[in-house]
Image (cartoon, rainbow, N blue to C red):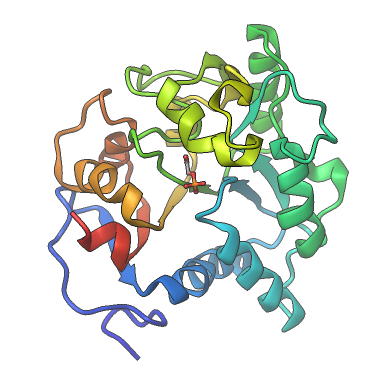
Length: 257
Ligand code: PGA
């Protein structure tokens, strides 16, 4: 066992700027399992709770690890799933949609029915407000999984997003469309220009947040989020103000600056 008690954790790391942020740095191979141990504790404490889920490549191994824990007896079927964001203009059954990702990589492996799987859809402010009502009706998010963009975004809250923003339609940064182009045949112009995202205020309302970060491309954004000032220029830096945040980063994202 390592000092943090999590599998694959490396030794002492520079403490984050916020004393409330727990930081776990692990080998790339251990990210999924380390994050899953944290999520599983919350699920075991509240098997009918609300799990906020992120899409993207970083949390993939986490969902695979959670599915493995389900096979070993962790009850995940009673959860409700609330996604962070979704592209505008893609059909829900488009394999590139986050609705498809959540179904394939999270809801199905965890045995959560479609009736308790929520993904923000559409492109209007009214649809954003409706998603906020859905989250409220569920009693709020118990634990929100988030990733970080190369530009520091959380969800699709791009730099400059207001800290009190709620679920709303947004424009994607050119840099985000470039980062996500591999999922669209390598063409940034093929990535939808607009999306629906939980706001920063929505994310901050979650009772706990787990940020999962992998890869060298995230190193600069992660360092700014952990050690820099809280600023809208780096949306993830606002997590310093949340009382219950755990960051699980691989050594590439943490050390390669
Ligand atoms: P990634 O995306 O996990 O696919 O790198 C994270 C994000 O952009 O929020």
